[in-house]
Amino acid sequence: MELFNLFGIDLGYVVLGMMGVIFILLILLIVTMAKLSGMKKRYKTFMDGKDGKNLEKAILEKFASIDTLENNVEDIYAKISSIHAQLLTAYQKIGIVKYDAFKEIGGKLSFVLVLLTAENNGFILNSMHSTKEGCYTYAKEVVNGEAFVILSEEEQQALDEAKSNISLKKLVEGR
Image (cartoon, rainbow, N blue to C red; front, side, top):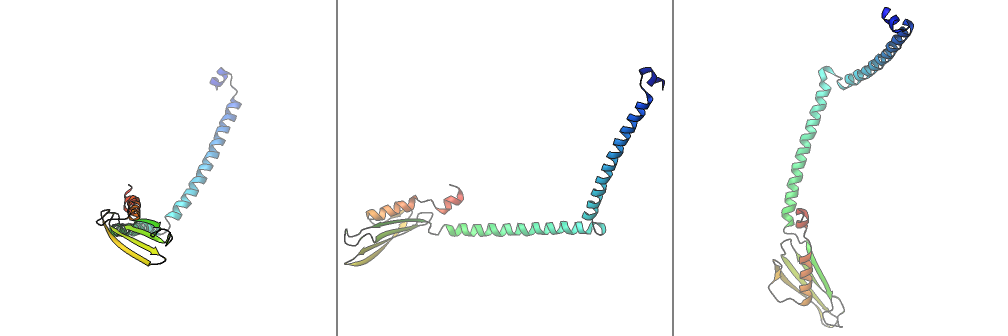
C-alpha cells in the first residue's frame, strides 16, 4: 500500500483495473471452453464406435478405393499402348484432289484419293469419270511416301497433300 501511496495511485483504481482484467480473462476462458466443447463433439463423432473401428473402416475403404484406381490406371495404360500400336497401321493422312479428267467432257467428277499411314505407306485411288466413256478407277501403292509408277499431276498433288498432313502419331508424341 505504501508503494501505491508513494506513486500517488489510488488503491480503488487498481482494484477496478484488476477486476476488468479478470473479467476479460473470464470471457476468454468461456470462449476457449466453448471451442473445446465443440472440438470434443466433432472428435467424438469422428471416432464414433468402439476403439475407433469406424475410423479404421473408413481408412481401409479409402485404401481399397486407391487400389481400385491404381488397377484402373494400369488398364488405361494397357489400352493406350494397344491403341498406339494400332495407330501405326491406321490410315490417318488423307489427300484428295477433284479434277476434270477429259477436259470439258466429264465435268469435275473425277478425283484422286490418297490414304497414308503415319509412315507414309498406303495407296492412291484415282477415279476418272467421263460422260461418254464411263468411269475408270486405278489404284497405286505408296511405300514410304513414294509410288513406284508414274503419277499424274493430280495424283502427285494429292500425294503431296497427304504427306504434308500431321499424323495422329506425331500429335500424340507432341511433335
